[in-house]
Amino acid sequence: MRALQLQRLEGPEGLALVDLPEPEAGDQVLIDVVATGVSFPDALLTRGLYQAKPELPFVPGVEVAGVVRRAPAGAAVREGDRVMAFTMFGGFAEAAVAPPEMTFRIPDSWSFEAAAGMVMNYHTAHFALHRRGRLKSGETVLVHGAAGGVGTATIQVARGAGARVLAVVSDERKAEVARRAGAHEVLLSTGDWVQQVREKTDGRGADVVMDPVGGDIFDRSLKCLAPEGRLLVVGFTSGRIPSVPVNKLLLRNIEVVGVAWGAFLMSDPALTPAIAQELAKLAEQGVVSPLVGTVYPLEQGAQALRELEQRRATGKVVLRVRPG
Image (cartoon, rainbow, N blue to C red):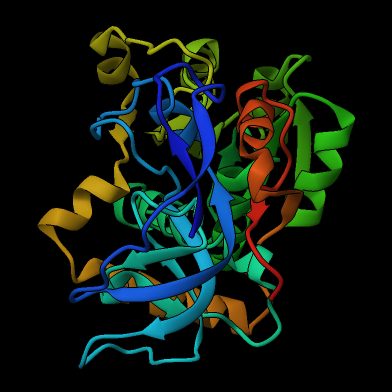
């Protein structure tokens, strides 16, 4: 099979298109990959900066969409099903394996490209907002990086919970993407968005802030939290891991909450089917519908990763592996 293999920890330039043996299915689902999502963890993996550090060489790619070739007994999917799955590694290839509990049927109306952006982003958004953020209907959610894959997923999941969504983006092109995702209002990060949040909430602030950026965005987000507000730490795409004087949390009765969906699954695997069921309902209602950004052929995977690293991406960046 064709695959993009990381041979050197040099970022996207360390990838090479190679021919490899297909993976052994074992007790997992074997999928003929049609499209694979490109995510920020993939970019970190190519530089050895992710918490998981597989031995070189390896095939990146944490989520795929395709057709089941083989499924173990007892799996909820079967041969020939159109599926989307979380793979952890190995997705940048023509065939990949995924755990049965992390493999789900694709809604009939969705393309493979849309499905390739579903599992990690939307499960992360749901876990962040509901399990970690305790989001309630009627609350205000502020979403940073709102035009990206996690950002657009968060907008839709928050709307599905009955929340009001304020989106922060860096330019008008990304603002339009956030609006298409369903944001009620869009703020530009180049302006005084902290003051705008206060004005749009009658001085109260946001109840929940979704922050995959870190750095200065985190620092300023603390200033626009409502009483008992929760700042959800999802990642650090800015490159700087921030810190906070805890007296600020004490005096203002606010929280900083860590969000690590993948790590949590190891302690509570029952969470996955529960989230999947709720997301399926939102998909049926038309609330959840992944926004696809740039679609590259498999051989241009390095270019796709550079788009993410340079923060030019909108929606979900996808690699098209084969016709489907």
